[in-house]
Amino acid sequence: MASSIKAERFEQLFSNSGVGIFIVDKERKIIEANEAFCKIFGFTYDEIILQSALTLHLSYASYVNFANIAFNKVRNNESLNLEYQFLHKEKKILWLRIAGDSIPNNKEVLWTITDITIQKENEQKICHLNESLSLEVKLQLKKLREKDKQLQFQSRLAQMGEMLSMIAHQWRQPLGAISATTSFLSSKLMLGQVDHAEFEEEIERIETYAAHLSKTIDDFRNFFKPTKQKEEITLESMVDKTLNIAKPLLTNKNITVQTDFTCKETIQTYGNELGQAILNIIKNAEDALLEHTVENPKISIRTYKDDKKVYLEIKDNAGGIDEAIFDKIFEPYFSTKLAKDGTGMGLCMSKTIVEEHCKGHLSVHNEAGCAIFTIALSK
Ligand SMILES: Nc1ncnc2c1ncn2[C@@H]1O[C@H](COP(=O)(O)OP(=O)(O)O)[C@@H](O)[C@H]1O
Ligand SMILES: [Mg+2]
Image (tube, rainbow, N blue to C red; front, side, top):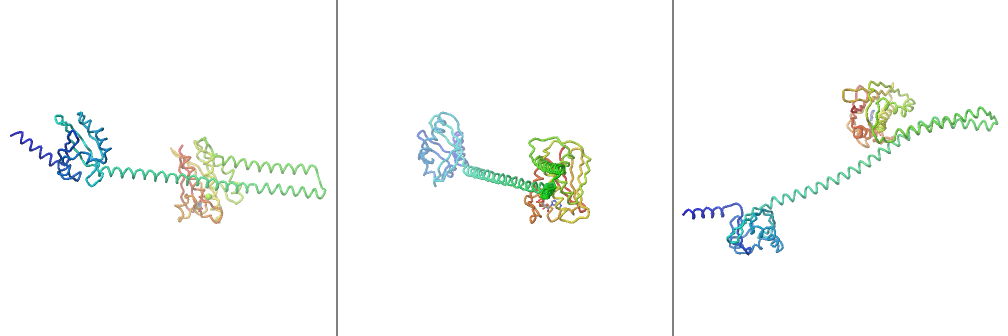
């Protein structure tokens, strides 16, 4: 009596289970299957019972492979749990998690299965998505790098252009003087008024001018040479170096330069690059002062510090940055001077130098008709 109740309970468990259960004999014939199994594979009980397990497999090879990796092991009393592909009655591929246990006396195997097709399909979708995402990221990164390279190249070109125009300006005066001296000497020659001492004096003057020309080139070359390693500098020395290059032009345009150095602290940074950033900001101030006729055009440069940082402030009284373009001025190629010789690279390059190379911060604000650029660097 007790055993028949037990058998009934097992019978119920077998047929009502949500998990597919089936038993194969030693020839791998399906000798028992529950409702969940039939549902998963799409067969009726009568269609599948006493059929070979081959019916459930994708191919003969897959059937043989399953014997090697699962069936034979289970028959040797190894318990097993794996994910494997099977074939639905409608020839759809099924992904099943399948676990087997041997029924030793009869050399049969009892298999339990759960359908994980949807989960697998989702995993595959995610996998594809991941692959295409990582491809897309790589592609965009490559594009960005190319753009970055192009930007660097354009910056370099812009910088060279500016450098040439500054050299040209600084050469104009000594070149003019040389040419005036040579015409003076040749007119003397023509008139036959050759005074040996005077000629020597004038030639010496020409040599001095030529030396000056050559020094200008060296100054510029050194100024624009990239620094490979960080160096110990003070903000004051940086400003001095930059003004050395820029001041002749500023003085020539009647622009006053005022400096106020309250921070004498040394910092470790890339000096020449920083100098270029400072020069770009000063050049912009000069451009702005020339564009808007201001009564006393002035560029004020000051340094100060707090606990953590040193600051360099460059201020001009040309009226400040136009509010309409305030958010754009650091963008590459943005320039309101395109009609003249603006490249729109100066501030973008300065920001890259200050923030990426020197790990500092470059900001700007307007204050009472003045544009104020501030470079902040860690001590
Ligand atoms: N000191 C300043 N005062 C007013 N506008 C400025 C100043 N500095 C920069 N700008 C604006 O920012 C723009 C971008 O500057 P920049 O990147 O150096 O390019 P560019 O000088 O070639 O135009 C300038 O065209 C100008 O409109
Ligand atoms: Mg500029």
